[in-house]
Length: 448
Image (tube, rainbow, N blue to C red):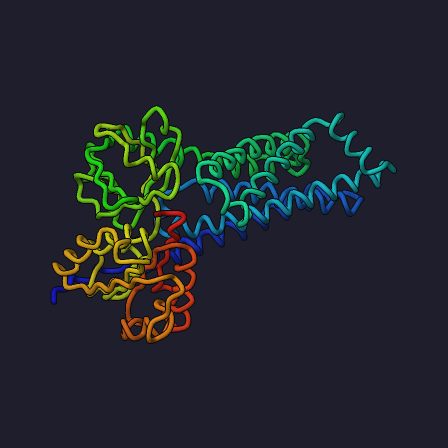
């Protein structure tokens, strides 16, 4: 059995360092905003004071949201878009509630001060005060985005539709910031306060512009990707091979994914997330996708020579976070794509568990077995309905995992598959007391 030498690990774990940095950033800015509020002087009316403070926290949450979606390489490589997306989701709900609190308390507070009806006061504010109408429109857009982000709505929307609606967030940011400039007392209370707010928003907006515009444009101008082959893997799975210039200089690793735009007349505007299904070799990139939506279904019809615009690479599902000499790779369905790529690069002895409904659904299996044989890895294909149990309970239950991988606590575990399978597997790993720092998961719905 051959084993790859274990790579030296950094003294400070990248994930811990990134989390500590974000936590420090949040605490420092919450403290700064609170001090600016009290330095500007609260209102004599309690409702107005609470509303203003909630508005300041909402502005801070909005800036933090921009940083989470900026796709900055330093954060993404350490935390992964999966984790950043979860934080983005919860920050979004916090933003929604702080802005609703701001709106309600301000309207009721001024209605109380002016001895006016709430509805009449709202109309007066919208029609007579600069920036209020923009704030109301911004709140409406954020409510819309929040509604489509709810789980019941997200499951029913195509990725392209959901992504397009999310773009309204940027319009809401511009409107809310202009409202803050027009009426924000704490914003204009002193030169120091103005400098702080401009710096904070400059960093947030600049990060988005750099991470989502400048960096993708620069990388695509340098690498100039194009399709060189389209290979059907099964009746509903296809692989797309791409090449370009200076791919050996592209900072990409096995397990990562890109947002791919294929520059054809009917789909140049669509950006779909697909993982690499082979470790980058400096000459070609390959994705493998299942026909699960309009974007992935149309890959089969791509023509050789089609230009490709790729945003990325993204994701922390890489060997950068491997802590132990050996590893366990668990894949579900077409979630095998980043797992197959990781098998080429990961250190030590590796066990691969591949969960599929039927053997026919096990795409890339010949490649997987060939790689396993070459490097002394073990591959188990676990087929059957999702609710099927084996002799030791659920197929990916704690007891079954223990039987298949007795030394599981001494391995890093990488999991990628549909959300239900991934969540069940993570519960099993917790039951087996596998340390959290050794568990690495990527949701198939986000990255595959």
